[in-house]
Amino acid sequence: MTARRVSRIGIVGAGQLGRMLALAGYPLGLRCCFLDRSADSPGAQVAPSLIGELEDGALLEELAARSDVLTFDWENISGAALAPLARLTTIRPPAAALTVSQDRLHEKALFKRLRIPVAAHAAVDTRGQLLRAVQRLGLPGVLKTRRMGYDGKGQFTLADRAAIDAAWSALGGQALIYEKFQAFSRELSMVGARSPGGETVFYPLSDNRHRDGILRHSLAPYADARLERSARRHLKRVLEALDYVGVLAIEFFVVGRRLVANEMAPRVHNSGHWTIEGCVTSQFENHLRAICGLPLGSTRALGHAAMINFIGEMPDRARLLGVEGLAYHDYGKQPRAGRKLGHCTIVRKRAADRNRAFSDTLEMMGRTD
Ligand SMILES: Nc1ncnc2c1ncn2[C@@H]1O[C@H](COP(=O)(O)OP(=O)(O)O)[C@@H](O)[C@H]1O
Ligand SMILES: [Mg+2]
Image 1 (tube, rainbow, N blue to C red):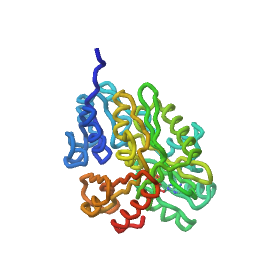
Image 2: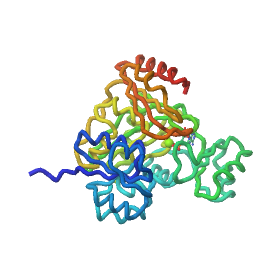
Image 3: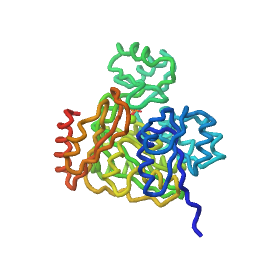
Image 4: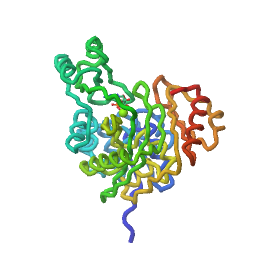
């Protein structure tokens, strides 16, 4: 007799992450169903979707009742909306992992408890607290909303004291955090997965370039054995502390010779998109394997990868497809300034060839990054 086969996955939110999860599920015989506000979401274009608010209790219950396991494209769902679903289905990653990562202050407290270095920071709820935080931690610094920020939204960089008023009028009135600005040499991230039985796997480090808070491109694997060991140790601690199941990513700053954790994402991550073509098993497949209790797949890199995000506008598809081996991903979204609409990935056996193909492709797109 074989164990019951988990095959129905409910996904809260149907953005590009959900879409790529659903696409990765088909070959494994996994059927995804989404809940999303839009009937034409990236996910709904490739799998069935319930339409409505992401925290609509009745719809969430319907999704849970239809699913063997419930997971997330959108991790900001409230604990209160999740609680009633636990008796209907299995929730993976665990609700506690979602709640901690929804608040930058709680996330940093977890990192600190696990002895993972973080930027010096302070909670800011009032203008007076902002003044005291700037006084104590110094300038420059970054003021951020504790909740709901993404792609650099809800952030204000303070270069000098004159910026305090502008920062406060932009963000004041909500729970904030002030962080000391990190003079980093690079931003790296690591994606890993943990199974219900506690097995863990880790992808190679990814070297990420952001502009205006948005990821422009990633180059991977970033080969630095010492930083790699350090990132794995940090990620493993977080996975174990949360009794985590699924894929989780941590973004790091490289400051001097050490890693400083910036934030984590309890889900598949943009900096892991290169794993679709660049690794034996993609982050999307490994998330599904983990939440279904299937054996995790190899995270070995197949070569040197470059992943370029399409932001605000789509490139000339026919032109890009002329690049040998380029994998093109269109998320099916309406173009809007600053919006991630798709990405492409190039994998080469040798780093020098990857670098050449990467810069040729950027040039083709009229970008300098
Ligand atoms: N304390 C900081 N010091 C220097 N740069 C920062 C700091 N915080 C954020 N940034 C820059 O802004 C980007 C987005 O910030 P992040 O905290 O990751 O928020 P988001 O949730 O929008 O990704 C980072 O990848 C980094 O480039
Ligand atoms: Mg980030």
